[in-house]
Amino acid sequence: MKNSEIAVRKNEAISRGVGMTTQVYAAKAENAEVWDVEGRRYIDFAGGIAVLNTGHRHPKVIEAVKKQLDCFTHTCHQVMPYENYVALAERLNKLVPIAGPKKTIFATTGAEAVENAVKIARCATGRSAVIAFTGAFHGRTFMGMALTGKVVPYKVGFGQMMGDVFHVPFPIELHGISVEESLDVLDKLFKADVDPKRVAAIILEPVQGEGGFYEVPRALMKAVRQICDEHGILLIADEVQTGFARTGKLFGMKLRRQPDLMTMAKSLAGGFPLSAVTGRAELMDAPGPGGLGGTYAGNPLAIAASHAVLDVIEEEKLCDRANQLGGRLKQRLEALRADIPRSPTSAARASWLPLSSARPVRPSRMPTSPTPSA
Ligand SMILES: Cc1ncc(COP(=O)(O)O)c(C=O)c1O
Image 1: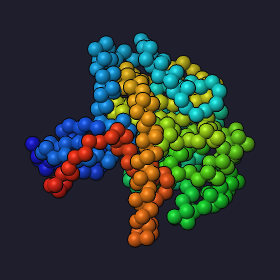
Image 2 (image 1 turned 135 degrees about the horizontal axis):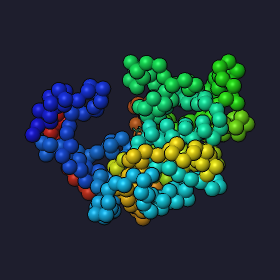
Image 3 (image 1 turned 90 degrees about the vertical axis):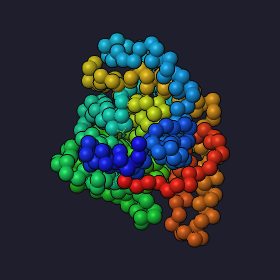
Image 4 (image 1 turned 120 degrees about the vertical axis):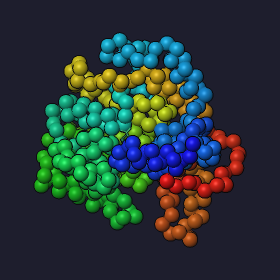
C-alpha cells in the first residue's frame, strides 16, 4: 500500500473540512516513533497533538486497557456505573490545583470538557456571558468554536456564533500587546458591552497552544483572578493541552492563582478518548441530575488507560524529564538567537516541544528517504 494511493481514496471519501497536516499514513507506532504504510520510520514530534506525553503504546497503558477489555467495554456510567470512574475522579480531585472540596465529571473530547465547564459555570452563577482571549483554541463544537479566538479556519462558513461570548486581546510582547492593554480592553468591555455581573466565566489556557505557545504573563493571571473575585466571575483554566506533565508540572496553572474549574483531555488518557472537568464541589453540583454526562462519557477503556497514565507520570518522573528536555532545547534555541533574533526561546515553548514522547527514546537512525507528499 502506498501513501499516495490512500491519499487519492481519502480525497474521494472524506470531507476536505478534515484538514490534514501530512499524507503519511500510519501503520504502527511505539514510544516516540511511527512507521508509515510504506515502512518508513519517523520520530513523532506531534504526539497526536499533545496526546502522547507517555509515548505511543506505553506498556502499562496497554496492559491496563487489555485488562479492562477482558472485563467489559461499555455500560454507560449513567446506566450501570463502574468503580474505576469513581476512583479516577477521586485521583483528579486530589491532583488538580484547586483548594477545598472538589468534584469531577468525565466526557470524551476536549471540546466537550469546555462545553461542560461553561454549562456548569452558567448554572452555578445564573449568568450567561463568557470572556475568552484572542488566539485561544477551545474546540470545534459551537461553544468551543465561539470561544476560540481565531476566525480562520475554525469559524469560516459556520454562521452565527453562540451569543454572549467576548474576546480580549491576549498579551504577547512579540506582537506589541502588553498586559496593560489587554486589561484596558477588558475594562472597556465591562463599560461598553457587558456588565461584569452578567459574566459567568473567563476562560484561558495557561499556555496558549494553537495561539502560538504563549504563556499567560503572571501579571495577567494575577489581575484576571482579582477581577474574577471582585465580580463573582468564575475562572476556567483550559488545561486540555497543558495538562499532564507537558509544561514540566502536572498542570500549567500555578498553585497561587487557582482556577474555579479546570478542563482536561488529550494526555489524560494517553491516546484513548477521555476528557474531564474538575472544579469546586459546590459549582460542580449546580446542574441537576441528568444535566451532565453522555453515552460514552468516561468510557471504561479510557478510564483504565488514564489510571495507568497517572501512574507512569509519577513512577517515571515525567515532569522532571520534561524539565530536563525543555532546558536542553531552550539552551540550543538561545544559541540560535544571534542568527535568528525571533527564535522561539520562551520557556513555554522550550518545555513543550520535546514532549512528543516523555520516555527515553532508543538511539536510532532518522529515515533517509524524504517524506512523500500527496
Ligand atoms: C486548549 C484546548 N482546548 C480544547 C481543545 C479541543 O479538544 P478536542 O480536539 O479534543 O475537542 C483543544 C484541542 O486542541 C485545546 O488545545
